Amino acid sequence: MIFKKISWYFKRHPFLYKARFKLLSKNSNISEIKDQTYNKTNDKRDIPKFFYEINDVIFKDFKPETDLELIKHLSIWLQNHIKGGPGLSEPSDEALRIMLSGKGGVCSDIAQIFNNFCVINDIQVREWGNTRAPFSKDYGGHSFNEVYIKEREKWILIDVSCSMFFYYDNFELSVIELFQLIRDKNQVEFKSFNLNQTCNKKNIQRNYLNPNIIPFLICNYSNKVYDAYLSFFRPYIPVFIIHFIILLFGKSYHYRFPIDNYKKIFS
Figure 1 (cartoon, rainbow, N blue to C red):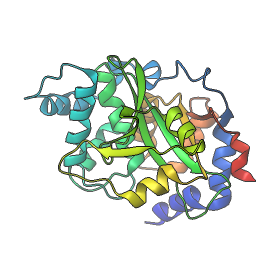
Figure 2: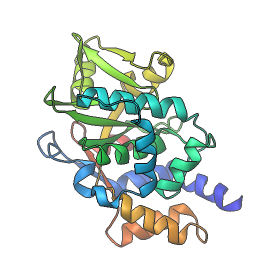
Figure 3: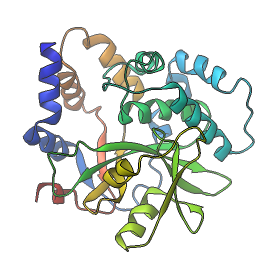
Figure 4: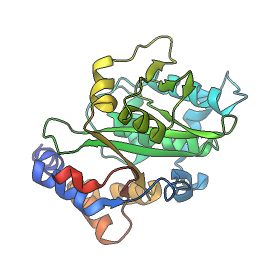
């Protein structure tokens, strides 16, 4: 219990939250992130076997003919089978087990396991996060994904926690398109493609449409590395120390800000 309280302190204390962004953030541009994908850092052979077992269940009675059909079916299945709960800091296969048992999982957990399912299904994927500039102690951020849909020849933002796309003129939007349209004060639409669920409009406003939201791309996240370190150290030391060790060894992920100067967070 004491370790959980210390971990929460290090994650959510305003000074330390901002320190994390100072350590991990890089200013970038749209051209530089063009080829950044989760797949480049994570090989299919490195995804835990449990993901393949669940993937067989997910697609047992459904054979998608397009990338769009595949990621919709995958997202709906995950949303319908993950109730959510406390945030997890476990190796990815254990995190998936916990989430499917109904005992945990926040947006970042869902985004990370979705990454692994995309890799084994040959879908190019990447993970994004949101924060606010200037920093708001009342906003902890949000995580979501972006997938490359070959038949559309473009990246499309997908929020798996609510099986949702954003639209403009009836076309699905990428992350960059969404935030550029919002900043140009264009009216964008959002809709869940899960017929059994509806989008929480307050959460959409909070996580995407608030004018102070800025997005960043999570790069160089090695599922194999984090699984190994969490499996070995998790029983003995707090998670925030494990992440710091990975950072010291130069194996940590980092954040790229393609349309904002990350220093705005600290203004």
